[in-house]
Amino acid sequence: MKKQHQMEKTELEKKLETELAAEACAKEAEAAGEPVPAPEPEKPEMHELEAVTADRDFWKDQALRARAEVENFRKRAAREVDRIRKRAAENLIRDLLPVLDHLELAAHHGNNSETGLQEGVELVLKQFREVLTNHGVEEIPAGKQPFDPTLHEAVMGRLEPGVPPGMVVETCQKGYSLGGQVLRPAKAVVSVARPEAQAEAAPDNAAPSGISSDSPEQSAHDPQ
Image (cartoon, rainbow, N blue to C red; front, side, top):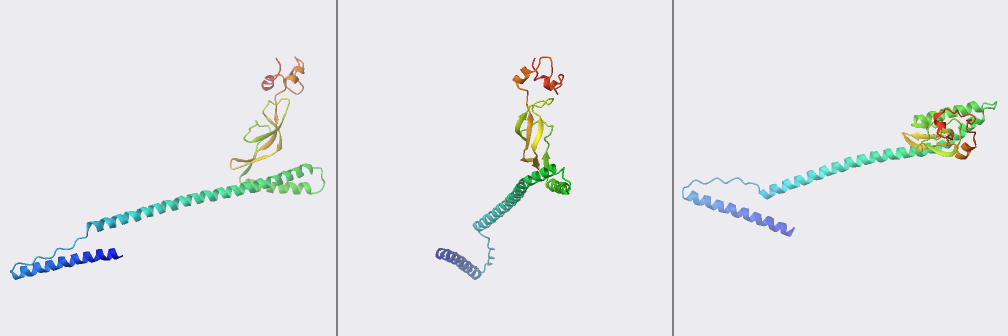
């Protein structure tokens, strides 16, 4: 503050000296009968203009940076909200799937009941499936489908007459997906190729029961 005050005082002194010199020149010219020159208008110092320009550029840059940061924050917040919402839906649906399994099991074993249990369970199952469908949950197809490790989980293999290897022959537990993402793979029994020992034990010119000898898929596993 003291230094700034001294600088301001120096500028004031310079201005007073200039004014006094101009008055002295004017008096001398007036005494000599010469025209008094008009004082020149004051011009702003160049360093002051540069300082104002630099200050303007600085705050403009700060405003642009703040705007970019707000826009990035808005995008990050939107992505985070979407991720949390999706994760919450996944957890809820994953917890509800065992309930759906139990209802389906009750409906299956209640076929011989003469009470209204069967009708009630089927109604609940229908409503439950509608809720899952409305939330984007889809059942993964498994029966009579080629085994897909991204969609199915093989629990065991079975030699199935007339069925080529690598096919799902039985679904032990249904699988579900949400928005194209697998929530739970379908647990399935997969057909396997006939073991060589069993193929050698079969008659040379007789096909096993239930298998067509002219089937192209099965003939690949028959003994030559």
